[in-house]
Image 1 (spheres, one colour):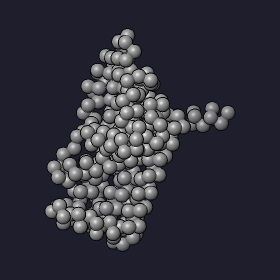
Image 2: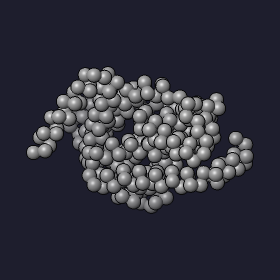
Image 3: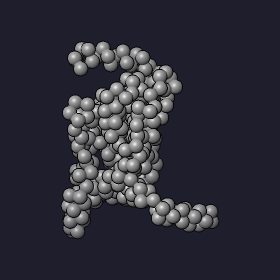
Image 4: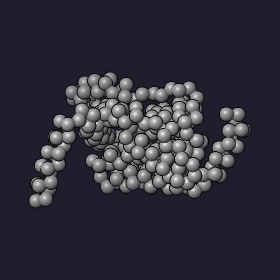
Length: 297
């Protein structure tokens, strides 16, 4: 009875918000497209259960170190830890992975995510996965019309990934006005208070623009022109690492309990590592400086 009352109210509020703001419309559309992509991925992977994909995944993730390596390499190649996390949740939700393997992939994805930071810092390059959305949708839809079950499954996966990329793109576009107005120079604060504030800014920024890589680009650029201090930039990076879990959390909305557990593990892991990094910030800075001197960077 309560749902029958709340749902119409929420729909009316949503409709009014969509009418009121074009930016909000893009954000809401992005979330909807993203979630539909998650459902398409899940449907596609369900058709592969018990087949070749499951055997490959079992071989690649039957040990913790293999799961870590799988997550690390996949994230490095795909340039998106969020996407790898979503895929891991999708695999787990349809029984292609167990929880331990999924957690291993998530941990590996966290390590692989640093590759983007190195690209940004070293080359200023970033692979924009949203550029592949349209080709994936085109080929995916064509395969969906085939009679072969395997082709249909591949089509669902391609469509799902295409919608994932497209959804993230629309969310970023909707939040572009916020991203363009972020000026880190206004928030430079020394001490523990500054670290906590900058962690919160890192979390918020990453949630808003739906990309820890984009946040890292802002951080590295600001640091390069001395807008923020070294400590504050590290705090922002810690916050971005927490904020990036929002994509996995969103993707877990439409999956089973196992998928939700993996999303929770992702959040818990990132929060714990953030707390450890915050508590050992000075030692962390000393270690980074020491390694930087060794490798001459």
